[in-house]
Image (cartoon, rainbow over all chains, first blue to last red; front, side, top):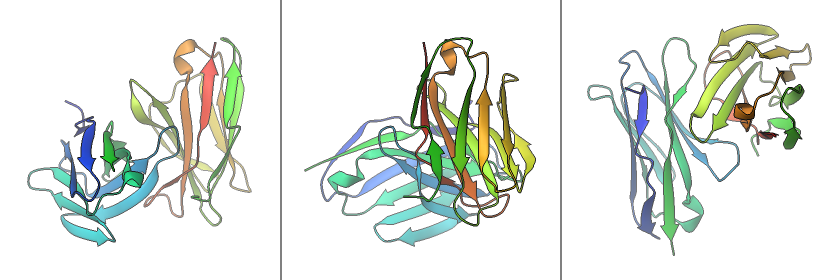
Length: 110
Length: 112
């Protein structure tokens, strides 16, 4: 079992939709959770960085962590074509080195 | 723009050769991380340096080495290159030896 798992997609949604992206992880020691956005062949861009369980909101993005079920989510409101990218989740524990999921490809069509 | 710079953007070389990838962290960041991203493996952590010293090691091959210089820039050296080393190589930086990491634009290495 991989430490961090994501559905590769692609997830295709119409413009304006609410997008839900999800990850599961296996190591209960993980306590830091991140979401990165990566456009094709570009460097990952940090979207959200959270510690422990709960919600964190930043503009149209909300990150949600449920440590009891080892489940992390990223919600994107009012999705735009410019949101089309691959979204990587990552988690880390005491070593602080993140373990990345393989990413979910999102396509937002006009 | 994350503030992390990497050179070169693209590198094409032959098997058996040696290359050096360069990374400059964001201004003020002390920690540098190197990652390899390939289609079949995803984003894999290679090695971390903090203020000039090696801090953590991941799935880095013995043919690969890195260092961080007093001005905090870092170099990743890849030797005896194989076809399977073809990948995107990313550098990331953070202020401390932990916390939020900001990635550079990457170096695309093609080994022929």
